[in-house]
Amino acid sequence: MIRVQGLQKRFAAQPVLRGVDLDIATGEIMVVIGRSGGGKSVLLKHLIGLLRPDAGTVAVDGTEITRLRGRDLDRVRERYGVVFQGGALFDSMSVFDNVAFPLREKSRFGAAEIRERVEEKLEQVGLAGMGHKNPAEISGGMRKRVAIARALVTEPEIVFFDEPTTGLDPILVNTIHHLIMELHRKFRFTAVMVSHEIPEIFEIADRVAMLHEGVIVEVGPPDAVRASENPIVQHFIRGEVEDVPADHQR
Amino acid sequence: MFSSSTPDLWPVALRPVAALGRLSLEVVEALGRFGLFLAQAIGSAVTPPFKLGRLLDRIHFIGFRSLTIVVLTGAFTGMVLGLQVFLTLSRFGSEAYLGPAVALSLIRELGPVLCAVFVTGLAGSALTAEIGIMKITEQIDALHVMALSPTRYLVVPALVAGLITFPLMVSIFDVVGIFGGYLVGVELLGLSPGTYFGEMKTFVDWSDLMTGYWKALSFGLIVPWVCTYKGFNCGHGAAGVARATTQAVVLSSVLILVWDYFLGSVLP
Image (cartoon, rainbow over the protein chains, first blue to last red):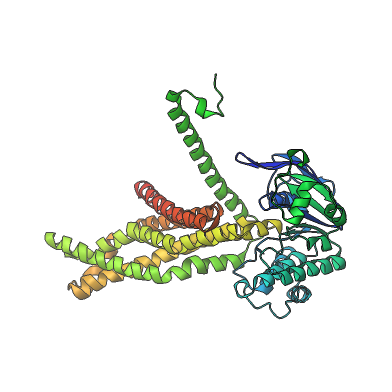
């Protein structure tokens, strides 16, 4: 379980997170929604340990990670898989080498075992036979799938997805979402996804949390969030632009 | 009373002092980060796992890919030296000393300095740009979350490759430069080959060679250190990478000249 309590972060004079409280249960798909620039990716970077908060804590199965450094933090990260917004594939390596990279560096598997696992993962994301290509030679949707394969190849317990479908066409968005659902059903990892693909994410989330101006304003199952009376949530879901009264912001 | 966090409220007369203080703190902080960056890299370099594959790749990246420019610039540096020194020496009737003059200039000064500056422009700038792009496309974050050290993968191999390749490239630069001087002095201007090389043996000794090699070795540390540091600390987007690349080349070149003067004054 991941427990976020009172998380605060500001960059220069700009507060981005203003006290985020969120519990993510083991094995669930938690989708964090919210407007662009609302701090979703910053929250995710705190969960991964790439940013340190000004105040508050992030605990993973009881281990407070915001104070960890070096080997101790690496031990927690070894349980993670992360799909970055742009894929973050190593452009000096082929697709195969990208997916194989974490296994080569962190496992004791031999070359044959690594090949087998990488080819299996590439097949699961629909990219069988594409291993020899370079990331620059494949489409945006394929790059996202390679990133998913790389994040899952070590069979992590917790997978973070940072806007895995941004910039893709609606068909590819659904393809990626179904892929994530299918892989989640198979491997039962805990998934934390940042997205603003409304309404598609309601189909795949176990729970949805809405982050608005640095705080979680709504959290619950997709149907409950959809039916929320909070005008901020309703405006976001409907894509409306009206101002929201200040007393609804928390 | 006034708060230190609100400099706008400070008396006008004190504001320049406050600005100077802030600037000094920023400079000291930046130097501290710069030094810490190297200390971390040295710490990673002496502890396993060692990334031999990455080291070979960086030797190719910094050394092998710079060979053409090293040979080309070495040859023309030697030829220019041969021509100018010959014309100067001929005024005193001392053309016989062309060989040692060219060799000493190249081995002690021009070889290490020019070679380092050209390699900075070629490989150093590419190193900064590559790491900068990795940073802005989250590839360095990806290494972090895989529980792998970006310092071990990106900085240590570049530093070790610099230490290995710079002395080798300087050797090539020196040899090619000396033959460039030979081409002009002997083949074009009529000096005898025996005089050119014979006097060289008399005047160039081991301490000259070692001076050149110590310089090459230290530049082999400075250039990858500055260029990887600038890549790791680049700003946002393409503009940030471009700025970091320019800064890396300028800072490396300045440090090469400053360090060259310092070594030149302490080494025999």
